[in-house]
Image (cartoon, rainbow over all chains, first blue to last red):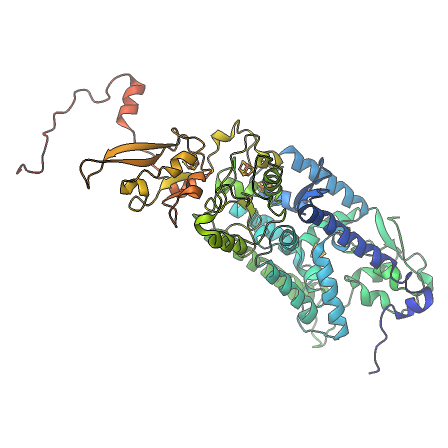
Length: 278
Length: 295
Ligand code: SF4
Ligand code: SF4
Ligand code: SF4
Ligand code: SF4
């Protein structure tokens, strides 16, 4: 077989590097910016936001709470104080509009890691023969809630790599690197998109908000599609694209879409745009 | 979306194939995780003896359901210390160093470690330890609770894991001090060390010196540091200040420091007080037995 073309190459040639990477750059800016805002406190004494991704207070007044953590707390038998519930409503409201898994693509620090792992996985052209179902994460999500109810404790937080890594950076890491390394190895060498695409219950929880999200990616000019499959190659959830390109609706309706916008970037034909759920 | 490839030529509907290759393994995997989580919680239920929860913390089982692992209490504690103008020593780094670093710093300082340590009290449990990851605790020997009157940690807690109903820091029951080593405590040896007693913020209530005859010399007194659970807040200043290399007085989590009476036990004199008279109709006359008496 001849060497495969690099996805996105054609887009760079046609649209120029910047326009072929716009959303990727914005996303990195957002991920690093949010992490940076959290880090400014402990590193520079500038407290824009206090706390961690599980619960925090922004600008000294705005509570923000992770709905999955609250769900576990409730399942474990504790009714949190008003600030936590308000914080949860704020977060729910935001992600219900912009797409639940926008959290994954634009906020989550693990995504930076898994993106690097995926890049490596592609470079090394590792196929891997582990076959996991992409629905596993929803089962895990359910089990986490049940485990919280059975143990009466937010037990998943002992292991949750999403909050663990961020907490590690903000406070102290302990053996948190081990978890991060495991995820990296899984994604780079065993199963492409292994963590975010198959296992992560945090992403699964946020994706549930994607069922009604207003902001979606739309294959607005799908008649121009040349079947180059570059979008499939870069998408962390490639199965979500096909219905929009070939199905009855040209909007990517799947709640699993991260709204990362990478398909918009790499499409040389400029088929995709961000739009509202039609 | 993808149609079933019937390589074997068998009749297998896509949904059945999906059920076998996806649903069952996924459910099994989830079950394995759940069993692991429950098992883990089982093995890690109690706090290790060196770790004390912040003031106002709900009882441990409830705390583990309530604490969102956000660390805002830890931040408030460190910030409060940093801004404390009365402190003479250098302000601590805002970001908490790793636990190992703490302990080695303290070990290096040894006896010269300043009592008013610059190390913030609260820390957040790391992954891989035996305290629920992400929950706040402190190690009194490294840095005791400073008993801040305005309780910045409790105020910062959004979830109610640290109870805002606590009216004053003096009501805190973070743990209970116990004079665990009555052989090496200097006061027990007959000296007047008194350091723990003098450092107790609830001096003469939580910690008293009880005079006894020194049985060894027969003529001297011993002043035994004695903790009273009603007033002890578990702040750990006594443990922090103990001059021994390994403290003779230690704050333990309540579950480990206290015994529990059997639920059917009644204390006679309390019952008597409640009833207003003795519960036993006539006082029994029991013979007094002395060791030398032969039965
Ligand atoms: S799937 Fe999980 S780890 Fe991946 S980006 Fe989303 S929340 Fe983060
Ligand atoms: S009361 Fe104790 S734990 Fe709370 S902020 Fe003050 S020193 Fe820290
Ligand atoms: S502030 Fe409250 S919820 Fe947050 S870590 Fe501390 S005790 Fe837990
Ligand atoms: S822990 Fe020690 S210093 Fe603190 S109140 Fe109790 S006896 Fe006093």
